[in-house]
Length: 47
Image (cartoon, rainbow, N blue to C red):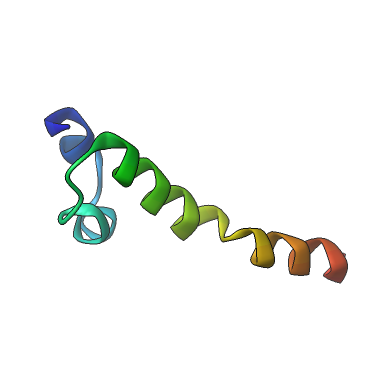
């Protein structure tokens, strides 16, 4: 997990600094950058 923390910028690190597993880090970052399934559906409807 240290490698993941070192690869992140300040904003991303602040989002995931409380995570205890790599999976938690992944899900937190993916939802922050891609959005939830509801956000994805709204984006598709807007196009």
